[in-house]
Amino acid sequence: MLSKFDYVKPQTLEEALDYLKSNPGTKVFAGGTDLMIVLRRNIELVNHILDIKGIAELNRIEYKPGEGLFIGAAVTVNEVCQSEIVREKYEALGQAADSVASYQLRNRATLVGNICNASPGADLSSPLLVYNAKVHIAGPEGERIVDIDKFFTGVKKTVVQKDEIVTGVSLPDVQEGDMSTYNKQARIKGHDLGIAGVSVRITSDKKVFIAMSAVAPTPIRLTKLEEALVTKDLTPETATWLSKEVANHINPISDVRSSAEYRLHISGILAKKGLLKLIEKGVN
Image (tube, rainbow, N blue to C red; front, side, top):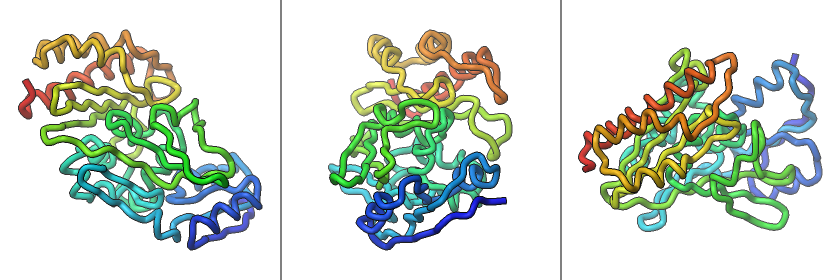
């Protein structure tokens, strides 16, 4: 049985923030795919639900040359999948979006909801990390913008305060030749969080970015590993080195989905696969 709650659907961000301020304990609802599980299992009692999908400014996915891409909080994962600009310029994000649950769930789920749930295994976190995305947060004092690597503070925890709403995520524009890829290992394709998810990006000046999910309490960038890669040529031999070196930069746990030992192994394999894929596309 679901808990009884008030449901409101404001048309403006100002109305939403006012309601949030006046009703402590309100849960913000966009896709609702995570919140509905919480309610159905009576994990948490909720008195107020604030549906932000009626706010027009949160329903936009917009690209501006020289500035980059903005994805609003109400944009669904399927809209990210189907975005031509995502496919062209932010490939890892498009591939990660494809890997989220089923088509039906992606019609409800949102990119912002995926990161606000702050699961260590959130599929869309690692591509955002390799693109140095920024999270836009609105509150009583106005908007603040947080770097994605400062957004997650622990398992199911973020920097978002109770009177704030995440309005969207922005990714900087990329130069021609910028490439990325996302690889995921899961128990059941389309129906499970990843045992590990790995994004690899190479910029036009050959700088490598690597980020992972499900191998730490929060999604992480492997910055020390990226620094080590700067000294190496981008070759198949380096990809093989990477597959072994990854284990020195992560500290995964064992849980119902996988043992820590398997996560250490598969993370290296996925990183190698990602780097090889980009090398084969023309990086040398």
